[in-house]
Image (cartoon, rainbow, N blue to C red; front, side):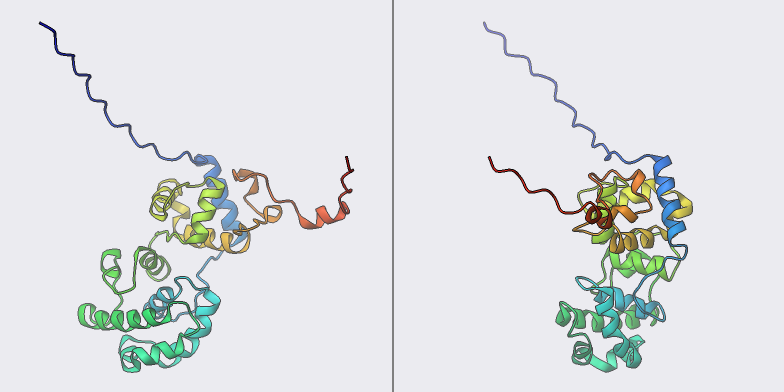
Length: 248
């Protein structure tokens, strides 16, 4: 009689390890340097109250702040409340934002979120993430921006700039915006959390650019993992043209 082979004990699933970060000392130095470089960070979107900021951020998806500001100056001059936005109507909103990407769908969302703010929140922009994300066209990123900018919450909205800076520097590596947000929430010292969103987005927009990061003028270059660092173009040009390769 043959013995049945013994079953091997099932392996426990491996624990998912958090990506390796720079460590608390370097992280502290990075935020201190960014804070010193930009003492008063704020959004570059133009707004006058929570409602106009909410609309501006909702319009900014796949669009530049400059382009959104150009469109909203005239829009907000005639419709800066949910009531006025509804009176303007979807076609009226669309006419003002035609220069912005996805303008048809965005106009529809602006009207729908205005209606919901009146119906469900007494005409006031809600303050919590759960409530904000019930509004049409408002996702987690938009909610985080509004909560941070006008309600003073230490939220971090991960856009393409913050995603790039966090991964490139090693500050909070992640494969998705949600992973990066969780990483930043975990590693950012409490004293820097309120301004972290703005410091990182502005640094990514003007210094740590997508195609060619300007490492030679970066205030956090010495703690950043990115290599090779981009040299100062002025220094490179001063060396003169490269010698031609010898023909074999």
